[in-house]
Amino acid sequence: MSKKILTVKDLYIAYGGIEAVKGISFDVCEGEVVTLIGSNGAGKSTTLKAISGLVKPKSGSIVMGEDKSLTGLSTDAIVAQGISLVPEGRRVFPNLTVKENLKIGAYLRHDNLDEDFKYVYSLFPRLEERNWQLAGTLSGGEQQMLAVGRALMSRPKIIMMDEPSLGLAPLVVKDIFGIIEEIRKNGVTVLLNEQNANMALKVADRGFVMETGSITMTGTGAELLANEKIREAYLGKSKTN
Image (cartoon, rainbow, N blue to C red):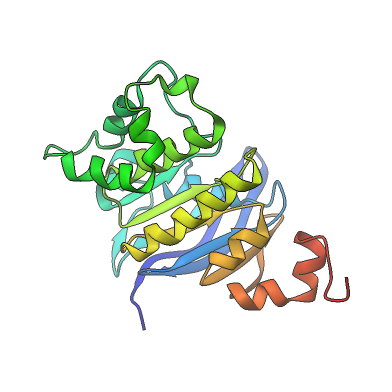
């Protein structure tokens, strides 16, 4: 069995007096694709932000590997530990070129980046074609590719993706999920927050269903995809349809 690379335990996160995440616990093993699914406001994005150091938990623990606590560390320190985030909405730097955006993903590194550029361009040939184009002039799909490529430039052990399919055309969504599988084949663990439950569960080894800040169901991707309640709530269909 693969070793646990990330363990979240009894995590509580509050905004003001409102609890956005209510004591959730889950783990991620090396080489897995794990997805959080649920409706808007379920706490999925907040969970990823806490893991990446953008939000401070009220209580609970976030541990990488066997004993490396991430709780309370800065975002830079968490990136240095091997976790990168592809944020919701892409967040590329519009007035910088594609290559300059990719370099920003490697800002903590001081070694040669040539192999990493080759790797990212092999995943996303369109980025190489647009190497010197300003990121703000790219299509939404190309910006999402750039955001994923930028995160990979830090050579992460875990890449977290927050709503990677949001606002993209179906064909582009298919491409993005194909890349997620390719990233996993290359040894990077993937933690995915995705409203497109159908696509997410098809690529996921395991999934966790979140509702109003709590995890209400877990299972393999195939198990959740076949579950009648999940199909009706998140896929808009039942087995009889």
